[in-house]
Image (cartoon, rainbow, N blue to C red; front, side, top):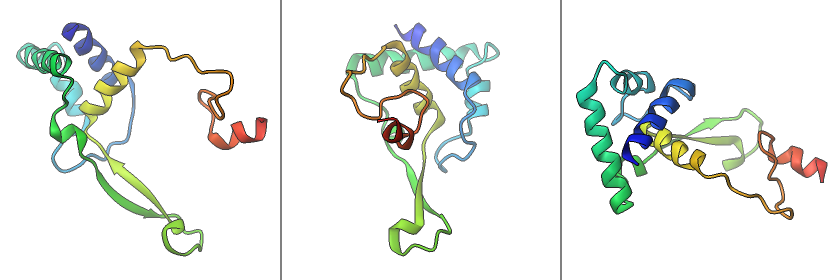
Length: 129
């Protein structure tokens, strides 16, 4: 299971081009991708051990559960919180691991689910309904 997790995380890190901004306690996605490459076999063994411990205990590292949030102004001339969009910086390794877990399971969307159109915005689902 840990080997499969490692291969999926490695694929996630290499294929998905998420944001390059990371919290100060993490390193960028391209560094994680380099560390997960075949050039670093010792690091691969360490990550497989980490993934095995996560699977056994279902407890994630504490730094994976933290995010750095800061407001970005929308410049929409609205007052208070409506004028800002919150941006959360997360560790790229944690995002890749969680994405790999979610991609293993195909969730069945019930027919009564509102706004559950894959790759569409919530507003589009409201307009379609």
